[in-house]
Picture 1 (cartoon, rainbow, N blue to C red):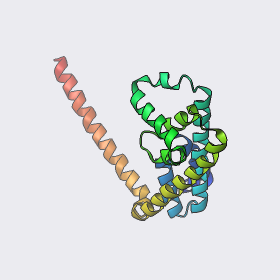
Picture 2 (cartoon, rainbow, N blue to C red):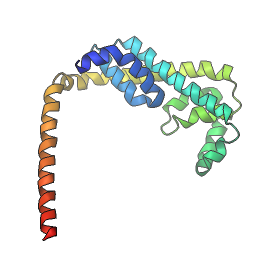
Picture 3 (cartoon, rainbow, N blue to C red):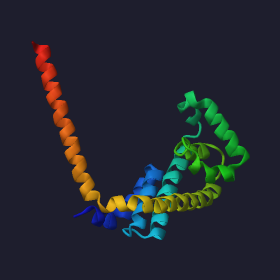
Length: 187
């Protein structure tokens, strides 16, 4: 089975799982796959949004469950956590939607939001809106990037063969050098 068939068969499930854990890279790759015609653009956006929404919802629930001990667990980041909590209290709607776009806050934000007193009935719709917005933007960037990457992907088999040979040659040269150095040091 070649890579294209794997993407066509398991691509949407992989996007859901991947966007739950690490979102931007997976989303960009989903957009590239949509550009290549392996996946459908609207389904990529929905899959990525669903995965991102589920992941953030789970982190939010963890934050609600362990709300009292959250600041203690991240004691060395106390200033950043205090600043984030202040933002959550002053602008909860913007923070929930915008936290997906804050580098370094992607995972901790839903936990902090859950630890705040923002009720689930407010978090859930904002989480959905933020996930759809985020998924649309990054999938579109990947789709547009597919224009650049596309020609290279069509020759991927040739590229992989060349890279394998190059890595093999480098490995052999390194092993020979290593062998000669050990041999000299043993004398």
